[in-house]
Length: 363
Image 1 (tube, rainbow, N blue to C red):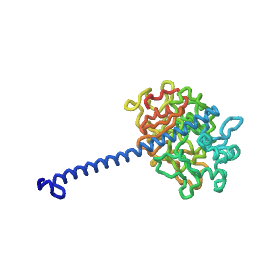
Image 2 (tube, rainbow, N blue to C red):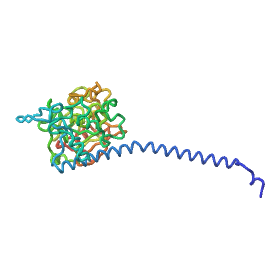
Image 3 (spheres, one colour):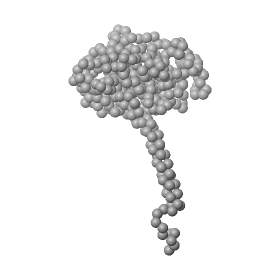
Image 4 (cartoon, rainbow, N blue to C red):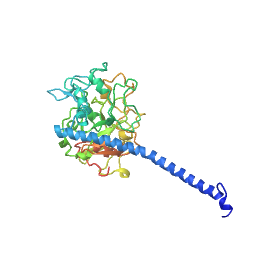
């Protein structure tokens, strides 16, 4: 046996080989960890979509039992005019669609503690032992997006009022939504009887048949939001959003009409993405809204606010903490991600339940 083959310790060649192996292993480790970090946003989005899909199943089961979807908010109406006379803050009104779905989400016992026919959500705000406040303090995982960076409670110090990240898409714009409230406003387009134009809204009583014109696979039912201060899950006016601003940056009306249906000003039928003809100042939705510069407008949710609320206005409409997308549920029960850069016309057509419009096929 030669002397060189019996030496103790590493040769220079051994040292080089070992160093290369360690460097490779370190590199693989970094790639793996980077991949894991990259997987987290994707897994959060998938979990969020699953939450929303479970809510969609509950909607379907409710519709199967009652032949209608729950209204976004329970209301009282004038028996002669049919106009909404009361929402939150009055007996028998204000309960959200979330409350109606409790039995279909495995929370029938919680549902049974609420006096839905004779009471109203905010009747005992100063009594933490009241069934309403006990219920409002219970946070349900299915109502919270795993990517949400806020707190489950309106006020983390008191932990009295829990929120939902998922809200009913009630209308295209705020004036349309207000047509079904106790403070109606004149919608900015079309005849008054087509408003609110969203899937469900305060006092609505329709089911699948209401979407025959546009198709329920093309109509948004729910959208996620990062709003924390006006999102109490039990209260109908706070468990709802609209999708697009009513006016452009110059304060002019947002809507126009060509062909057979209304749309954002400047739209040319079937022109999307790079082909869109909508001027930039009109081609905006609340998905890509600068909420910090211009807070989301929700005058209904402002009324009857809890003392625990932030003193600012409502900040967030449809929005998320997922990079580049916001998750939605459609009236056919599907849950899908929508790009924050979607055309305003495309988004409007997905919101209207019977607008006679032409939704894009590839969104």
